[in-house]
Image 1 (tube, helix red, strand yellow):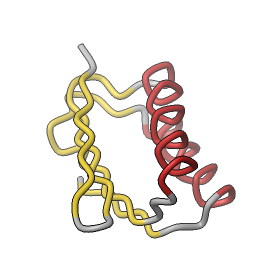
Image 2 (image 1 turned 180 degrees about the vertical axis):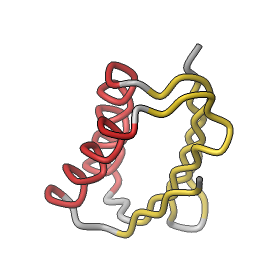
Image 3 (image 1 turned 120 degrees about the vertical axis):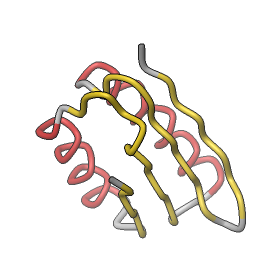
Image 4 (image 1 turned 90 degrees about the horizontal axis):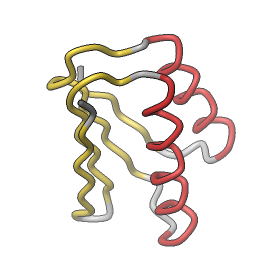
Length: 79
């Protein structure tokens, strides 16, 4: 089961991921994050994958590369 918790605090978007972080779940997550970025001009993001059971590293790092190319904001991954 995949679960996301998204919180905005002090001009930073915090995204906590739990469960299986696979390609399909990352596509959904990307849509949510991109919507928030476009709507609210948020460029500081912290993604926490510490509570994830499985992370598809190829899909995850492709997601990070796409974000960097499209927005180039400050993104931190907590592993």
